[in-house]
Image (cartoon, rainbow, N blue to C red):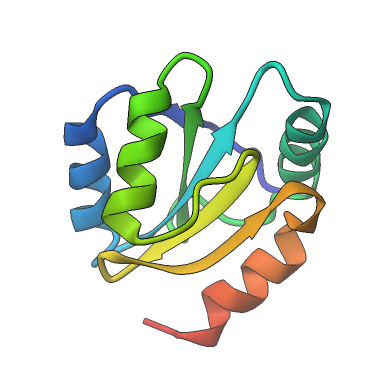
Length: 118
């Protein structure tokens, strides 16, 4: 298993930077609520099953409790329905996969990542 090192997002500028970066390297955004048991379970599953190298995927974390406007910005910018917890896979400047609640899992994320090879 690879170790997951979260990069916390705090601003819309960071989101825009990583959207641009997603043209060169996939990025995964995890929208996490520290007040939600389902979110804690989903985060744990991502962290324990993570098998992406740092070269393959950049793991990003948005605390939806602390940054609700940023969470809404992501939903609007990527044209996805806001949920929490939620995973968004960013490739080539767009969201190519999303999962929410207990549907969040690394094997499905891996499958979608490999589905549209670089």
